[in-house]
Structure formats: C-alpha cells, structure tokens
Amino acid sequence: MHARALLAVVASTALACGSSGGDGPDGGPGDGDAGVDAAGTPAGAAVFAPDVLHAIELTVDAQHLGTLDDDGSTVRVPATITFDGAVIAQVGLRKKGASSRRPLSGKSGFTVKFNEFVPGQRLDGLEKLTIDNAIEDPSLLTGHLSYEVYRRAGLPAPRTAHATLRFNGVDKGLFVIEEPTNDDYLAAHFGDGSGNVYEGPWDFPKGAAAAELRDEVVDGRSRADLEALTAAVMDTPDAQLEATLAPLLDLDRFLTNYAVEMVAALWDNYAIVAWNFYLYHPPGGKFVLLTHGVNWPYWHADMDPFDIHTDPWGTGGSAPPGYLCDRVDRIPALAARFRAELVRVARDAWDVPTLQARIDRAVATMHSRPLTGASLENLGRFEAAVAEARAFVTDRKAYLTTRLGL
Image (tube, rainbow, N blue to C red):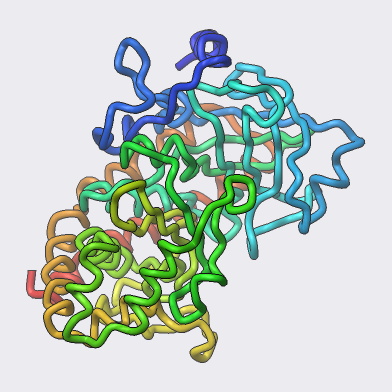
C-alpha cells in the first residue's frame, strides 16, 4: 500500500476499535473474522505486506531519551512514528528485548503502542507493533520462516515483514516487524482476547505464583486457573495425566506446538528451554500454548527432534527443557501421539518449496529500493546469511525424512 493509501487507513482507523486479523498476506487465511474492514481486508494488511520493505521513522524529544534508554524502565515515552509516509504523533514507545536489548546509540528494538496517549488511535487497524532489531539473526528470516511452519501446521503465529528504521534522523538498519500477541491477536484467533495471559520464561516446577500474569494488578486477575493446571501437571500420576489435563489444556495444540518447535529446531521456545512462549486461557475454554519471539537461529539440520535435552546455549543443564514436554516423552501413550504429530508436521508443514519461496520473496523485498548507511551494511550481512538459511531448509527436510521415515 502506498503512503497516501496508508494515510487514509490511519485516518479511518484512528478512532476505530477494530482488532487485528488473522494470518492474512503473511501466510494464508486467519482463524476468524475479527479486525476486518468493510471490504474484508484484515487489520494490518498494509503494515505486514511482505513484498514491501517498509520505511519507519521514530522521533523522540530529547527530554524523554534518558527514560527510553533506561533498560529497567517499563514506562512508555511519547514519540512520533512515520510508517511508509503515514505520520502518527503521541504514540507510546519502549525498548524491547532481554539479551537483545541495546542502547539507543546502537541498534535498539522497540514496541510501539499507538493508543498509549491517544485513546482509539491505531495504525492500519493495529493497536501495537513490535520492531525487532534481529541482533542475533543477520538473515532476518528465523521468525519469518518458522511462523510459516506454525501456520501450515494449523496453529496461529504472528505476521512479520521487514523495514528500515531511522531513529531521530539516524539510520539504524534493517529490522523485522512482528505482530504482537495482544488482545486483538487473541480475539482474532480465539474469539475473545480477555482471558489470562502468562508469559515465559517460566515452567510448572516454579509454581503458578512465579509466572508473569499480564494485567494482574490493573484488572484484579486471579491465578486460580494456572494453579489448577500446575497442580495437574506436577501432581498427576503418569497413567492419569492425559485424562486430568483434558479439561484444562488443549493437548492437541500443545503437541502440535511441541512438534513444530522440534521440527524447526526452535531452541529458544518452550520445549528446549521454556523461554519464549505464552500460555493463554480463553474465557470458558482450555489453556493454549502460543509462540512468539522467534528470532534466534539454530540452523543445525541434524538436531534430533526427539532430544529436548540438547543444549544449544551451552548452559551445562542450567536451562532444563519444558517440563510438560519431558513428561510427554516419558508416557508411552502421549509419546506416541507426539511422534505421530512430529511426522505430520515434518512431512506436511516443513514444505521446502514454500519456505524457499519465502526466502526468495524476502531477498526481492530487501532489494526493492536503494539502501544506505546502516541499512546497506545490514543488507550485506543478510546476503551473507541467506545461503545458510537456504541450506538449512533443504538439509533439515532431508534429515527429518531419514530420522522419521517420511
């Protein structure tokens, strides 16, 4: 979408309350009708258009730079964002990341909340946007490809696209923009985004009290749901675990998520280190495990999909694997279900032509307009890393075919 058209979208949605749509142009139809306009276009369709190298500019007054640069700050500062020529003032800006967090003098990642200071303000129907610095991923492709596998496996996953970023007039390079797992996203995929959201890193042996519950104080939320699930996971004998979990956790989705993580060698999520994930409890429904923050490549084509005790971080065992995955592996009936799902995902969702086509499209997008400065330097790193990404896609399929007897 051109800047003039996006400006019109900004104007028409600034006071609207629509929510973000499903997967849209980033990988197939969504799971629901939330967040579509009168023409049926999903919210965020322009922002996440994967064939556009988007141009983002962020401007922050000098008086707010200290607060923004404070790595311990949770305060959003006012900023102006220009997205493909569309200007929105008074958005809420905050740095993002843990090990990927960088000072403003370097390549910081950000989250932007469009309605932080202006109620109802949105961009292309979106309430929030994640701008990932991809410090660990010079290919800028790890999430872009992995989320495609999630969608092909039948699970929701964030939409992604690529952009250049200028901060207070300085070119900061190439970034990945990602759809946040907020109320809009949850409503689009589960019909209701008002349930409890718990965020990793966390695992069941730590107890429900140790989990981060979004909006717990503001909304007066109760952890009784996670307490019940935690008790079931920790205290139920093997023979009864599947039946005990049935009313509490969508076990089919959990096993699919587990299979995708192992097929795609996603070592930074739940199965291997219990790190980047959400547990969402839709009102009246069962807990579901959701992916996010896939931005560390572990391109080892021969990673055994049955070995969650692999140690890519070199922690010497200080980061144990996901406890529930470990239990699944030790219970024959559940292990058999996992293996069947692993075969299905490796056979059907890890589709080499589709993933290579996404790489081709990303390469074309990166070269769709002239780049200078840090963006040009990042482009050189991207080009050097693309060959590794291509090889991994092909070699991983070959390894899985042999290992699983596809």
